[in-house]
Image (cartoon, rainbow, N blue to C red):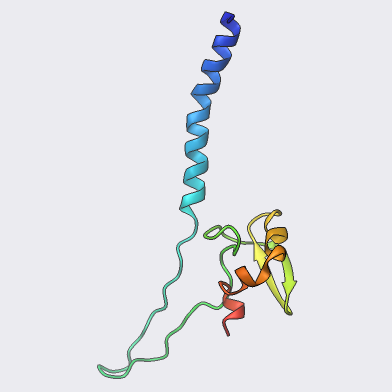
Length: 106
């Protein structure tokens, strides 16, 4: 093995670990899911619970925020995605993903 090849492998190893760590961090960070809140009008009577009905995360890559420029129409409603590869996966098995979407839970 030449000195140049050894140096290239060392350089690759130096950059590969931080790059992999960054990708993992981005994938697991995602958006936090909103929890419904209950407000009370008196000590015994709960008020109406408000739940977000607008889609905020990608149904295919769960947890990733949506890009409103990337969507498909499914059963008359827009379904938004995080990247250009997700609509194809969604359309391959839409029922698998539609159950997770707020626009189809009404």
